[in-house]
Picture 1 (cartoon, rainbow, N blue to C red):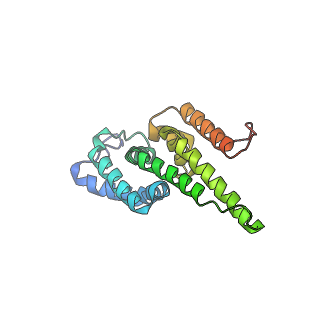
Picture 2 (picture 1 turned 60 degrees about the vertical axis):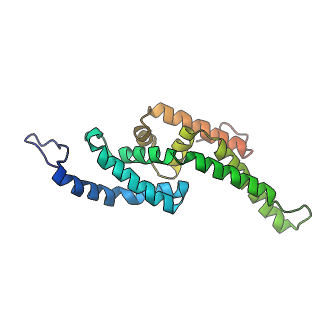
Length: 188
């Protein structure tokens, strides 16, 4: 990026664009990939990281240089990811169905009982995640997996910070309830 006489950063010209986005890619792609890989797997994450940067390059004229780059890129990545949410939802439902079918028969020893309990919690959690609305799931996973704070999530999803916090509270309460935790006053 070049600076004008006032020291303000201007949008990059076409000659600088490749260098700017190469630097942005080097700086942000690994974290974006980790976030996406946890959501949809490494192969699809690689594709979505590439799509994210292609969209960023194509839409560079829409970027406000006074705002942070990280939330902007996570916003693009999340929008790209939303196309896959239906498939992810189906995968969660399939996991819940498979876990229910693979339950061991009654009468196994105590060691197996522990495994059954763990499987039940996985089934319950998978079913609870499958029931989450896309926007609620986005908030939960941007915070818990990508490590963004509430302000960054708000910028990434272009929603108010208060909405992020209320969605996060609702999701956490829902997950606690699904796991049989009755203490609705637990600290988030």
